[in-house]
Length: 141
Image (tube, rainbow, N blue to C red; front, side, top):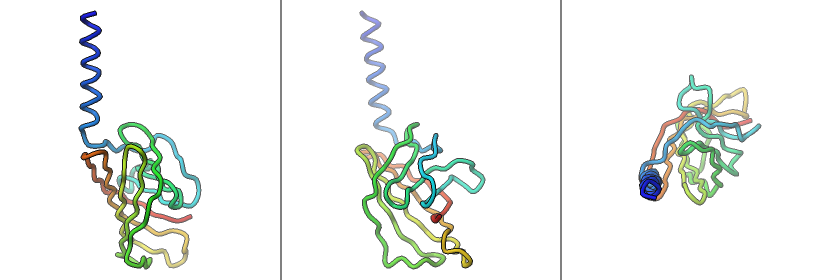
């Protein structure tokens, strides 16, 4: 009985400690988007994606060791013009997390309107805990 109470206290302490730390961002375990969308990695050499976005309807990220889906909320821009240096933001959330993605267009492919290179900052919030990461990738088909 004495050991059961000790293990229960340790378990509760671990859960509370996990909720108070900043969200941990990892590469996705599985691929969730196929086709048109946005795909971003930690850097150009990474093999797996940090975030996949299904053409603006939902985003998938691995947060705290679990692939989670976040629903699209809105896009904020001052009239997006697809040229190098243009910036805009998108917002996604679920019951536990909210994210803001701050995009910057880094390359427009003149021969193809189907892919645009970008860098982005992803800001992940859970309660008062915030993680911000820089990623590279792009959007298109």
